[in-house]
Image (tube, rainbow, N blue to C red; front, side, top):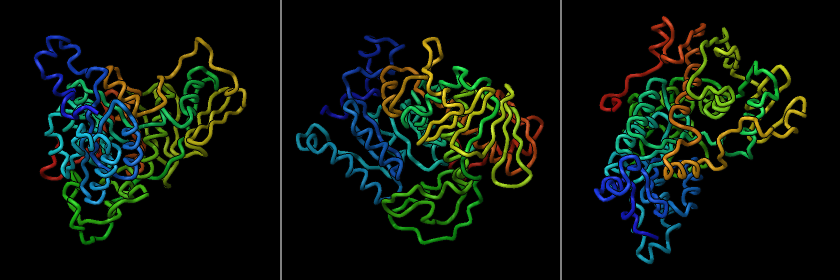
Length: 424
């Protein structure tokens, strides 16, 4: 294995010889035969599998990990160095450096990219800092905690000309089921799309957890980041290694509830099927009561409901497609048994979400789920949560990303960060 400090893109782009040889237009591109130096920020249940995938890539080396909980930080280092044990022995790999504070990690000058696996409320703060270092980014979903910060992130990605992948892996994986469903819808197999039903959980609630004694190996201030000050609770930041997804997702200070957690996957497929990756609905109509039943209306006339029998149900004038991580069905069955025609529009080719990002880091092409796409999908989830909170019809302008003549609703599209954690 090559010395991890020798071939980083950041060193490559700052060298006068490289600029002279390749020109400004290729200033971000790492040579094809060089390993990409990447770091992981956050190491919880989801990061276990994503890091495992990264460590299997021959053109990548994980050189650093960052985590606010000490047991998980030590385990992440152990996992990485076990993978590179032979290279450590030979001296060609210098070991995996550990960090508690992501801002310290980002001071390194040998990184090409970072993988962000923090809790939801820290995604944008961490990603903004990395983007301003011109590092390419893979960031887990839901991309944002609120609508306004998503636009800040998209602008930073564009300004710094980085490659950004949102971790909505249903676009690439799960047996091609979601990809096939979208292609069939684009090909008109269900006729004109009329109704979409998304079967995901409920909105978040204010955090009401009791205070607990903070473990000595947890940096609680860094875990909170921009969220309001409160005492430690292990439901938010579990102690040590864990095999569950932490329940911070249920609380509005940190995430968007079950609606945004799985909604960031399934509403993403709905947006994709409608070709709305850079837009959104024009109306939000919540039910008078209850945790499901909210309706979105799009300019095309398509109605999308929060709640349904499956992950994603698409109803058209000629039939229905029902798709989830474990199933793909249609009524009538012929919708799915007829092959896609040679002239039908096909989806972006990708069967491994992380690999797609890594390939794009090298080619500088857009990945399958950009920052704009991730922001727009997260916005749908946030719009639903705002609708449930206000319990009245809302008119949304997807171009301006504002509610029309509604200061009360617009105030909920952002939040004031905790002192010292204002947005960059």
